[in-house]
Length: 85
Image (cartoon, rainbow, N blue to C red):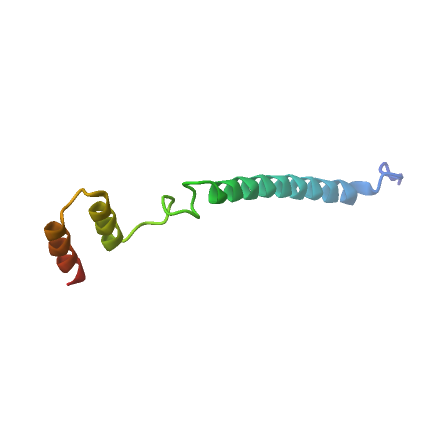
C-alpha cells in the first residue's frame, strides 16, 4: 500500500493546520474586539465615564437637575424626601 501523503505529514497535519488557522483568526478577532472596547472605555462618554453605560441613581439625577436650575430648592427637598422613604 502506498502512502500518498508521504513527505507532507499526512492527514493529521491537515487537521492540525485547520485548527491552527481557526485559532489564529479567533485570536485576531478577539484582539480587534479588545482594542475597540478599550477605545470605547477610554473616550469621553464611554463606559468608564459618567455619561456612559453606568446608570445614575434617582438621587444623583435629582441633584443634577437642582444644580442645573431645572427645579427650585422646595421641589428638590420634596422629591428628595420621597426618594429617601
